[in-house]
Length: 336
Picture 1 (cartoon, rainbow, N blue to C red):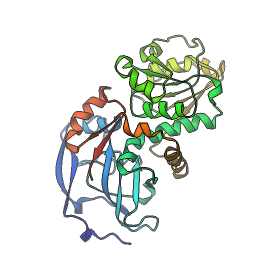
Picture 2 (cartoon, one colour):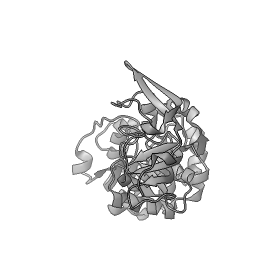
Picture 3 (cartoon, rainbow, N blue to C red):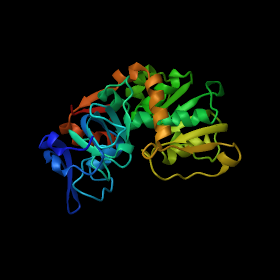
Picture 4 (cartoon, rainbow, N blue to C red):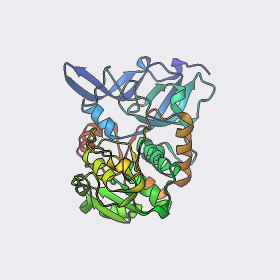
């Protein structure tokens, strides 16, 4: 099937970023369908979500080079039109990453046109909104779990630490690991307000994240068999220093800092392995493997609890909140 712009509405609603000098503005507006970027597949977007990177983009802190831009690094919806034989009109599809919402118009719009290679078919278990309750955060969390398990980590090895546990990636990681029988310690800066929520996800113990960043010795008391870190910076340095001999750490974020000041001692004296995990350009086979496991293993509770629904008009406010660390779990943006 070839793309046919005549089948599309003349305009669609979108959150559009514009730049005047150094000032970036975000406004919900009507956009002409003729302005959609190039791509093989046109999607009616039913839902998107909110990630830390989205917050940076909306508030002009991501370093986007081309304006106007529709942000939103994730989307889920229904194929309207496709020139690629892998996708037909009516297919339910999901997109995360690939620079969408940064270099290519993204998910905060009623329509999107994207490359077919960027899409996966939405697992039948998930509605569009549920796929976005998973989104980049859930995909990244599962890729971290897979990295640890492929390295040989088992529940019998001991405690697994998850930093940023009340956030999007962290909350999914806690839930997935606990469901697979791991004893999970959830590190958060919001233990007093989020403790009950995290225990409900399966955390066996809570830890104030400040305790990790306060660890200054290159080698601290051995505690963690493995860890999922979304923070970077001093938090990750503390995690590495306190990981047990032969342990594995999956690092996937920089909520604390992109810098890492540590020593080689955890690596050369304790045989600790640091795994970098990226979901943005994750190859299709690994991406599909992770989505298949999410469909099979994600606890139903996570699709209901800790998920808030919002509209395009809420995004500027929510962007400030997620950057300030005040967003729990996942936020789904309704577009359908």
